[in-house]
Length: 350
Image 1 (tube, one colour):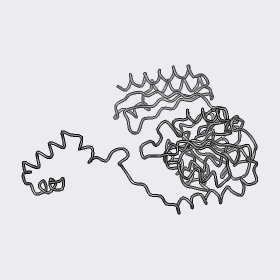
Image 2: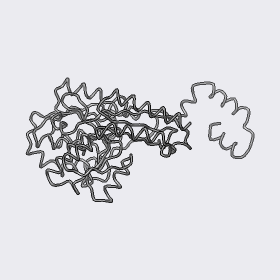
Image 3: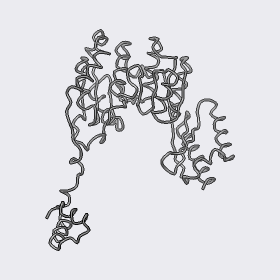
Image 4: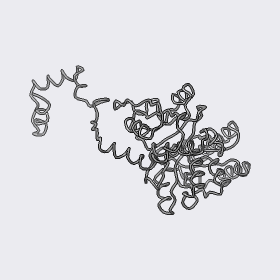
């Protein structure tokens, strides 16, 4: 009798025969049980849709091909890390179609190696590769392909805040930055805000999450926004992040201006950030807003920074934590200050 028989007897409320019980015990005591479990590479199915791949590649050809044909790409080489994820097949097709020389890595997904020590969440491999192979740029996508981070020719990271600065400046110069604004979250680096102010660009802040960035963009007619993680939204093209699109927007700036990635990054000064978690019971996570001692300490630090630093306190939406984020010019100094506030929060609210 097989497992269908077990289910039959169970549904009927009948006693399972002794013979079947012995078979079940034998299976439980052996390695056979693993044959019935869908784990690791046994999970899921995949289907190749060449028609959709062709349509996606055509989207980029339509928007970039004619322009890229006028650029000198003879000495321009990009390293691409597809994180063994959604862009593993299509990224190479796009870059080949646009005539951009490239090396591609981590493009052999097996269903379980997605983001495994690679992609935008693990940049060390890409940084080393770019430097050792004299690439002009490194591009890293995340597993589902909606985020993109970059690495300059020296192996230095270009995060989402830097991407927003570089591309917003380019769009402003071209007259395509709608309502002269860039949308970012409260977790974006202070350097992005200062860059926007220095370049007469409206800096619009939202709560953390790309959904809030998109809501603000749709509500007020903005066309550029994103997060430090590299989730950038170009609303003229898409209502969501697209890592390949983000990378091509950066490459367009580099090729048109004939500038290295490191040179483009000079327009923004990134301030050190420190994040410390304070453990607080879920029902007390919002009480820091009413605690006079905590608020006084925050105001004191803000006054000390005098515009060259900031304190951001926010309750975790999923964990019994209050996150203390401090930015400033000195890494060690802000680290100590963040710990002080976190300790104060734990002492006062527990």
